[in-house]
Length: 66
Image (cartoon, rainbow, N blue to C red; front, side, top):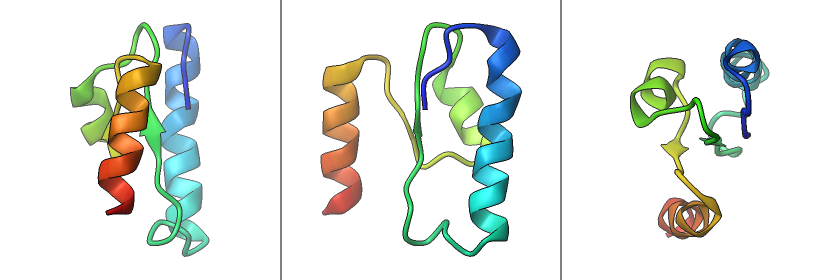
């Protein structure tokens, strides 16, 4: 997921929580990024990874599927 405004960031946590509630957190990985997002925020909401740009997101995906 990507956030362009801080006002959309709380919904990222809602998505992570929904995946957990539906039992999908083990099979669906969540990578977050965007201008207002940080690695600390990704850890806080329980995301699997943080990516600071698209190329870094590819690296994160590769690391997650190994």
